[in-house]
Amino acid sequence: METIDHLETNKGLPTFLKVLCILSYIGIGIGLIGGLINIVNHKNELAKLESQIEQLETIGFSYDLYEKTVKYGQLLNIIGLITNVGCLLGVIWMWKLKRKGFYVYTLFELTPVFLTLIFYGSSFGAFGPIIFMLSFLFPVAFVIMYATNLKHMS
Image (cartoon, helix red, strand yellow):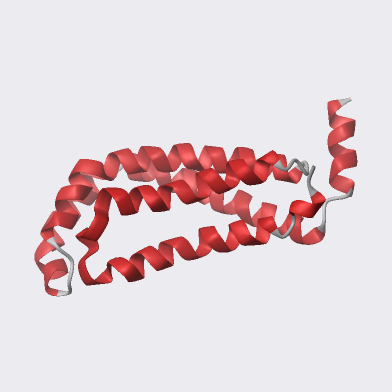
């Protein structure tokens, strides 16, 4: 019966919502794979960052960025995996036209952006506002596009 209900629900899935969900599935898959790679390669990435710190300082990044990456980088990698799983759950529910999926997706989509801002603060130096805006652009765009489809969800 669940399978039949799921198929009937998807008959009414608007094309735009379907495209958003498919794009989200792809993005979440990439995020999960990338997150696992980041967790495994964290020490290698720190060594690479340490070797480049002088170059980064000359273009406006601070040594504080390296220190905070050492302190918070792995935690943010783990949080990234958790939030990708949360986003996946939200997208699955939205695919089934369940409104709660939008709220779950929104929470897990925006959390990493704000946590990065909280953990790193001004460590990005002069590039901080630009990095924050770019990292915020796609999550907010997707939340807005999903929000336009709330009328189809119950």
